[in-house]
Amino acid sequence: MKRRFIALFSLLAALPLVAAGQAAGEEGATDLNSAITSGKAAISGRYRYEHVDQDNALKNANASTLRFRLNYRTGQWKGWSAFTEFEHIFHVLIDDFNSGAGTSPNRDEYSVVADPKGPDLNQLYFDLDPNDNWKYRFGRQRINLDNQRFVGGVGWRQNEQTFDAATINTKAIAKTALSYTYLNRVRRIFGQSVPAGKERLDGHLLNAKISISDSFSVTPYLYHLDYADAVANSSTTLGARAVGSHPFGSGKLNWLAELARQSDAGDNPTSYDADYVHLNAAYAAGNGMTIGIGYELLGADSGAGTAFSTPLATLHAFNGWADQFLSTPAAGLEDFYVTFKAKVAKWNLTGVYHDFSSDTGGFDYGDELDASAAYKINDRYGLLLKAAFFSADSSSPLTNVDTNKFWVMLTANY
Image 1 (cartoon, rainbow, N blue to C red):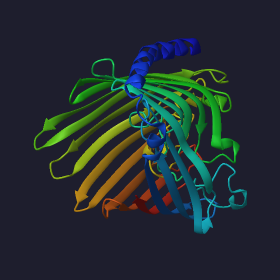
Image 2 (tube, one colour):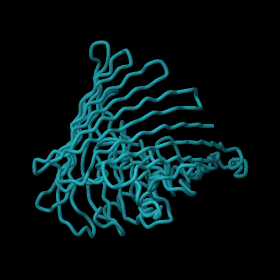
Image 3 (spheres, one colour):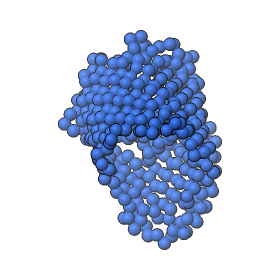
Image 4 (cartoon, rainbow, N blue to C red):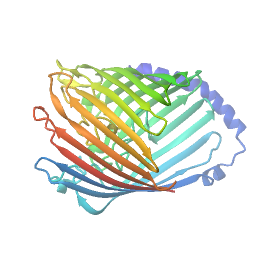
């Protein structure tokens, strides 16, 4: 498997390198010093208060955190440019919470709010843009594929997930956006001071979005993850997603259909095969209101005692904001959900209801109601109010308990 990916990477790289030399020659008069000094800087701040109330022996968590982020992108020089992004997370006044993964050992009696304090070099990469059809990126980078169900930046948490990787993006094939990424290390949300904050792997991500028409696309993908540290996460996933939209009355009907198959890989001690299904339909009315219904399955291999997993995903965006299913239960997970969105003046309102059950065994895990209200103060400032209410089913074999979470968040960008 690894040799096939390396061969594919070499094949993709060969053609545009010739073009890169041509582009470099054409742009040879560009001054390197001016390219560096003529770049663009940006700063941002994000304050968040989070409250967690769980029906267990843990104390309620109250977290007041502030993220300060500074980044800088250079100008181009012979097709090359660079980008760096630094951030620091502060605990402000209230730190009655466990930030998780051993980052706050003196706070183990509290519920988890996974926002550890400290500095982080979030991104540092070099781009090569030889022409309009090819782009290369080398270094620590943010990677968000499709809806981030399989690979994402976990942008909800204060410290983002990024990757030490090499990426090729090309549009050389008509109506196709093809990307290949080699992953060397995952920089997780817990920072670099604890073992859980970084994981080594030999990862290969191949994704091709094919535009059938302006309103319909199909994206086949192949993700091979061979972990050196968290070997139980080693897997190969092959799948495809189709998304489309169609005019319907005064609005539009949007839909999604996705299927995938996953099996063990590398040194994973468990041999398994599991399926993934995601179906969604949503009607967007002309008055800014949207209502939708969906079904997501992370299937189980009952014989192996394990289930479909997505360890690199932006998990908070799926299966409820209370984060009760960050790891798929061994019996799998079925999530039936209904969404409602509305725009009222400068407010964007969202409501989601989930009903959770197992793939095998006939278990009910519980249900959840989520709600948020986002207000755009102006182009620079924003306000978010958000809540999640998870109710565990008394017959569930899981250790999940009733969980309520509340957030108030302020953002500023310059």
